Length: 617
Image (cartoon, rainbow, N blue to C red; front, side):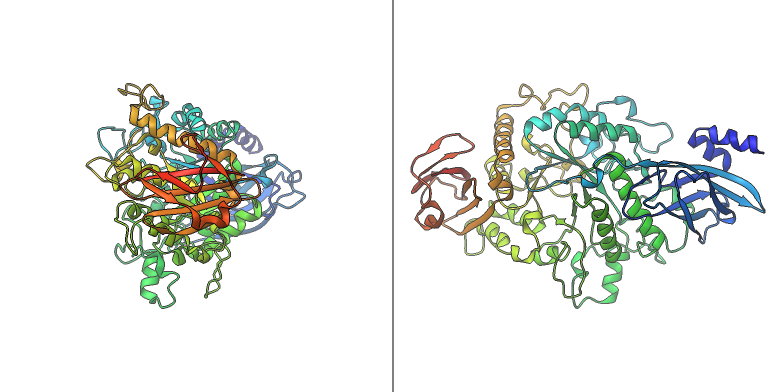
């Protein structure tokens, strides 16, 4: 018997699990050195819940077995371990016994934390975030387009099918992104989505601990992280705690009846995120919002279940440590149980106090978005422990501002009005601004393909307060086209696939207009990287008048003046009303053109454009 066990311990992990009947242990391994010593393992295998558990070989690791929990399904065990300050990296053995007979063993590994992991610095105001969808950015490895045994096949002719983009394609084009001037990459989820259809986007996880083989391997993800960091850039992971995919491996054998939020028949969420902060909300509406399913193929996870909550928290920590990630974007943040999300944020900041986390709180008013930012003085006492939120109200204003005629409440005044409500936020500088993303129409589509308006929008988010985010292809004038569905919003980048007729990743492959836009973005992004006033400086703005909106970003080192003309004609603009700042300066340099500005008292601003002027004393 001892010889058999010894042989099992020498078998590779996957084969060991297969032979012992243990199908999964999650997290698959862990680390020493975390502030929180608690680790809860989910063990899955046929009738594993009927066994007793002990640990051995733990003299070196000093791991303590604290508790074993059985649940409704006999195929699960939840094992509490304590990894204290004296614990060391190494391997110990989990023993599963019945009637004093060892039925299964499992070697569990503890690794040392990465050097400097706890002091990792996340994305911040000095960064510009670039959002890309791995399936649609570039196909660097055509051999993983179709995976034997997985449900959906690649078909580029269908907007909502897989197209073949992958991690290798991103690595191949990191130099393009660095040259463009972005400093942080937000990738939509890379975890396995083995759904029969519409599986490319990553938001229907079927395995929370595995990179989708269509994108590569877990090891490929680590290589991507290393390649990003080598270039001085940062990596943001996209996580989803509200739901999983309907084909997730646990759907055929749930640990307990309350693992999911279940209804007698399919019940969709109201999608009214504002109902959570609504002081007058009905219990019916509140429950349907947070417990209703996002879609029929997206089972709603119940974070009120303590094992589910621990599972999600640990999964987030695991990916942070495993792949050396710098920040998190949390999908559909208000939809899960908010107290569980608050605890998640607290745990993440406890282990990684320097990182940043941004939540998707898709609401239309600053007050309802601000409810979810860490430190908000909410009437109900709720604190999200979420450092950053997306500025959806500003996104809405950007769509309208440049399309409307100037009026008392229309036109460019909309931007001023949203910014002037920053008193709602505990930290308005740490919110993410954007003109478009993967869930809304591309900005050019909303502006009738008017490149002037796109440049104004980009100039604004790259010079106002907050952390700007750019959707992939914006710098290349990518549009949705006639079909406004998600599949075409998320078009492939021309040149990212073998055999494409042109390659827009190169200047030679772009047309004149595309190169003009790329150069505009490159110039502004490059300038922003070196100008601390645009990153962390104070903001002072003036009420728009005659379709012109003027504001300043400034600190002790630099002052930048931005003047936006929303009119269809050139304007000669007298600047006397800005004397409280301009009286200290005599001249300037316009950043995009590079031209000197010798007379600050009167500025000539072309139609539908922005002047960005670095002031000089």
